[in-house]
Image 1: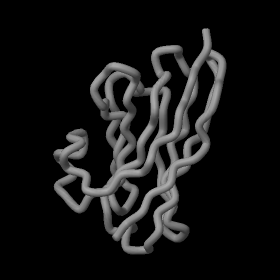
Image 2: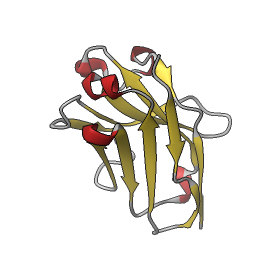
Image 3: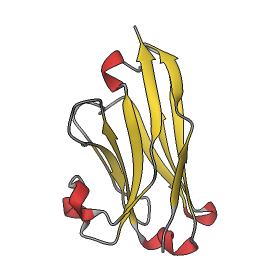
Image 4: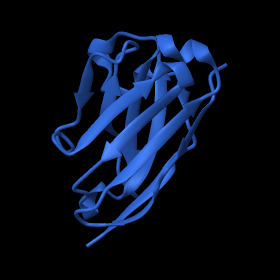
Length: 125
């Protein structure tokens, strides 16, 4: 059983930065695709970023390309999301997720079998 715990959310001003962390409970997660999703109030869950098990390939949602960076540290069972140039529309609950599925489908939330509890990010204008 994989457990994921996000941290690092909070309040930021527009143009600022935050770094989210996701800690996994088992070393086996190093063989999993990892993703970040977000869900704003009243909206569907949105793909933010994903990374292959090796960390060599990454993908991003159109709304965050060039501003957010996903990375992972398999030695410490950690995944990160560096968020720069934040905008008020980035306000949402951010979720970390893990999957053993096909990376070609990594933007699909249904690919992921394990989810964290989420961390709130609020960006003020």
